[in-house]
Image (cartoon, rainbow, N blue to C red; front, side, top):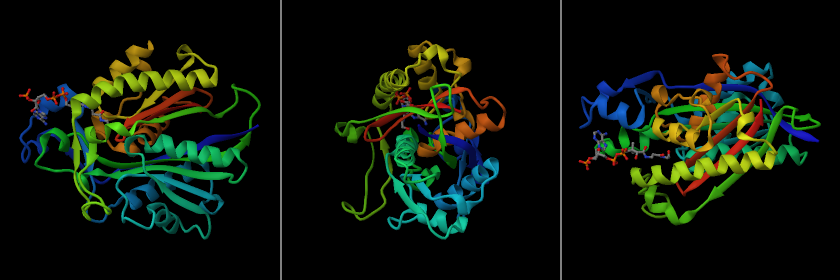
Length: 322
Ligand code: UT7
C-alpha cells in the first residue's frame, strides 16, 4: 500500500514580534484580558517585504532541509491560505518560482483555518493515487493585512506565519507503518456569517476585513473538534488512548483545554503555541507541528492527531504515524 509519509517539517515567522502590551498602546485592550480569554501573549506581524508566499517559501526551504531533499524532487505544491499575495495566480506558483522548481503542479486551497487539513488530504489523495511522489503541503497566512485594527474583538487574536510538511510516497504495510493513516473533513456553509471577510473580488471588489462572532464560533469549535478527532481515529481503527500528541489549530487556549477534556486526553499531550504565535489560521497546525518536532517532543513513530476548525464553517482532523 502507498502511504504519504511526512519526511520533513519547516516553518517561518515574520521578524517583528508584537506583545499584548505593545498592542494595548494602540488598541483598547489589556494584556490581562488577552491572556485570560485566549492564552495569547505574542504574535508576529509581517513587514512590507514579507508576504504569504515569502513566508511559505522559507517554511518549505526548512522542510526540504530537514528531509535532506532538493527542491527539484518536488512534483506537487499545495498551499492553504486565505490571504494569497494576489487574487491570482495561486501563491503556490510564486512559491514554486522562489524555490527554483522548473516544473511541478502547484495550486492553492481555501478553507481558512482548516486549510492545512484540506490541503493535506488533497495531496495525500494525489500521492496515494500514484500520480505524485513528493509534495510540499503548506499553510501560510498574513492575516494582519485583513484585520480591522479598530476592532478589538478580532485584531488581538491573529498573527502571521507559515508552516510546511514534505510528503513522500512510501510503501507501508499496516497501521504501525509511518504515514497519514486517516483524515476526516467537514463543511457547513450555513455558518458563513459567524466568521467571514466582508469583501471579495466578486462582491465588493475589495479585499475586506475579518469579522467574527467569537462566542458562537467558540461553542461550535469545541463540539466539532472533539467529534471529528473521534471520527478520524475510528477510521484509522485506533483509540484516543493510543495518541501521543494532538497538534491542534491554535485559536484559543481555552478551546484546546476544553477539546482535550472532551476526548479524555491529558493536557500534557496537546501541543500549544497559541501563546507565542496567536491564531495564524491555516499556518497554525504546521507551525505548531514543526515547533514540537524541532524541540524534540514529537518523535518518529509516534501517533499524532492534527485538527482544525475555521470559517465556513470547515473543520477536520488527520491521524498520522509520524
Ligand atoms: O480560527 C477560527 C476559529 N476561531 C475561534 O475559534 C475563536 C473562538 N472564539 C474565541 O476564542 C473567544 O470567543 C474570543 C477570544 C474571541 C472572545 O472571548 P469571550 O470570552 O467569548 O469574550 P466575549 O466575546 O464574550 O466578550 C466578553 C467581553 C465583552 O465585553 P462586555 O460586552 O461583556 O462588556 C467584549 O466587549 O470582553 C470584551 N472584549 C474585550 N475586552 C478587552 C472583547 N475583546 C476585547 C479585547 N480587550 N480585545
